[in-house]
Amino acid sequence: MTQSVDHGTVVTRLLGADDILILCHKNPDGDTIGSGAALCLALQRLGKTAAVLCSDPIPAMYDFLPITEFDGSYTPRFVVAVDVAGIQLFGDRNHMADYAGHVDLCIDHHGSNSGYAYETLVDDHAAAAAELLTALIPELGVEITPDIAACLYTGIATDTGCFRFTNTTAATHRAAATLIEAGADVERLNEHLFECRSHARMEAERLALESLEYYFDGRCALICLTWDQIQAAGVAGAELEDLTSLPRSIEGVEVGLTLRQQKDGSYKISVRTGHDTNACSIARRLGGGGHPRAAGCEISGNLDNAKHAILDEVRKELERSGAACAQEPET
Image (cartoon, rainbow, N blue to C red; front, top):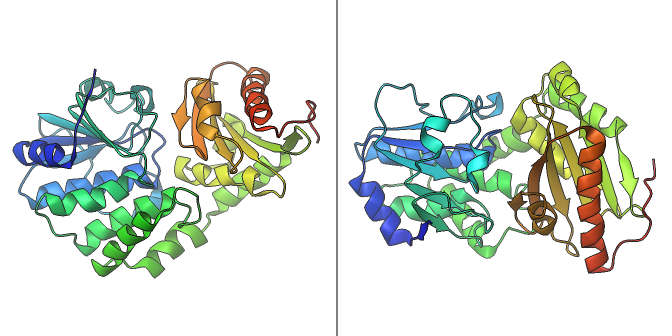
């Protein structure tokens, strides 16, 4: 059972530790990568040995971030996880299993955090783990440098959809202002993160739109990519994450679903909702979790099974909110 801790305890633990390994979640996004890289830089400025480990390769779109990846050159004595809500999210490649079961400290912003670490700092009011770290790093006695600011801004901006999502608060904007004052080049960062699309990303979007289906009188939209399509497009995990907002952006859609087949045949499902429905409630009933407007889960089995399972939970949530009507898909 985890022990919930406050900022002061986190600072004490990090200042007293060395040979630190920072774990990110599989299929890494801007928040887990940006948070991990920022914390690593801060710890290194304190003279500590620190590095970042992820089960999956870090996507090329984050190549501009100064990330020290773990190369096995030291034996970790303290393990920190950033932006990882559950142990199943670590993945099992790149020797991740050697460390994921022995996490000393978790820093997270998901209210659905399962409490797998020995000590956990969770603030589900924060828009991103990077928002938490924007406050924590100065408490370590480390100045936020332009490089650290770029990492933290990447985490906050990507998890808020460039400050468009409902998780954005006044505190989020104040954190961003702190990072701008510290030297984050927001024009360059926003262009890189939100305005540049690879050919592979555009091909994946084309294929996804070909699969578009509507359910429940158009209140739910679903897109799907098979593993073969993902491989053929050559698109990286982080760019696939960018597709998750596509179904919900359609007029009249309350629940947007993105199904992505993984190498083992299972489906990673991203759920995005409007104000009337709760994405986390939908995902949690299938073993996942997340936030009220953005959540996810994984389902084994074929595509029909995955669709049936997630749509049944969507129907229940729409009925709870009084928004459900038809049962049959519209194509």
